[in-house]
Amino acid sequence: MSAKSDRSDVPIDWARALGAVLAILAWGLACGGDGSAVRRHTYPPDFRYIPEAELHASMQELAWQTVEIQQVLAAPHLPEASRRSRVLESLQRMEDATSALGPGGWPSNHPRLSRNLDAFREDIRRARRGVEAEPANYFFARSVSDACQRCHVRDR
Image (cartoon, rainbow, N blue to C red; front, side):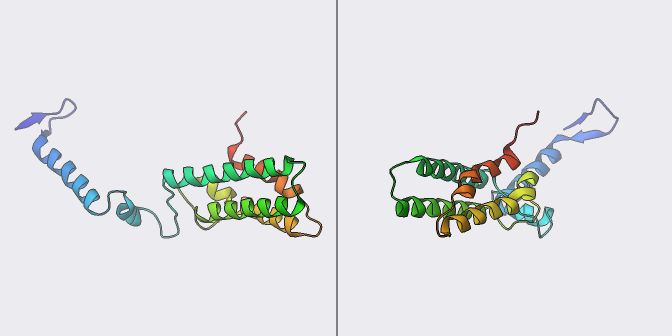
């Protein structure tokens, strides 16, 4: 069964076209339904593909820990040892969340993230050093949420 295209005089064999599409889909599913096998051949070796679910999970963790730090630092009657340990724990979880996104300085399917990830990690490390100092300095821990603005600033 052949049909003619409206745009040219070349006949279209719909059965072959459908067969080719189905073969490509079957190949994609057989080689890993998430597309990772195809990405290995279509992206350069130093490219980090970050699936949306992974990105959202990391961002959600970063947001949660930012709120936790703000709440801990705003609690007036919290003992200093508890305050310090909870802030350090949140900073560690933030470091873990950024590690899950891959190494910094590598291109990814989220270019804004790739450009700013190393600087954000440095902000977290600076906050950690401040909290670990004697006496603890929470300035950078308070401002770590401001570092989120590198990626999440609204265009004006």
